[in-house]
Image (cartoon, rainbow, N blue to C red; front, side, top):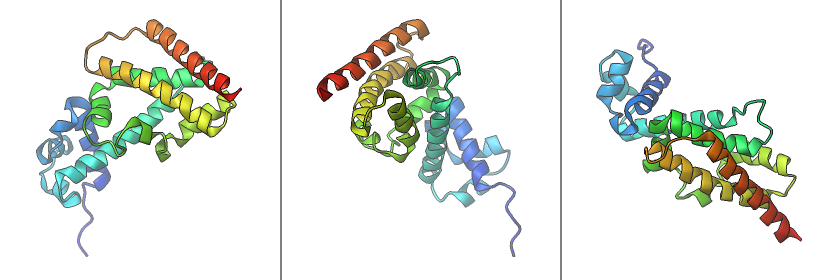
Length: 190
């Protein structure tokens, strides 16, 4: 029986995640990941046949991290969806390399944001939003889509250094979009 590898698959994924986080996903390769692990490239290639497979695993870890980040709503935040929207934008501010990896690298599993609405990763967010708005699932998804388009635009501009982060201004804009989306859905339901 061969000895158990000292460098695990999870360790390799975590190192690739850190490479993406610090220098960008385009820098994930056997050499940079092995350097993070203080090992040769052999353990990296042992666990992943291709760098593309390693990048996909790092992408999945990044996506999980992003979802957890979004769900950390401060207790002082009265509006859950406003909190998620602000966290989404804060993520772009605090983790620009991870934001670009998730949304601007071509690794996204869905083809577009409209397909993303039905992804399993969004179930906790959509469910919490549905509970807060007291609307049916389709109405809730419509509101979420409106907010997602707006928030993603803000976050993308910030992540690419084209706009300074101003939380007060962003909060005002996000509250207007959210209120408008809810009112529009309520009006349509009449």
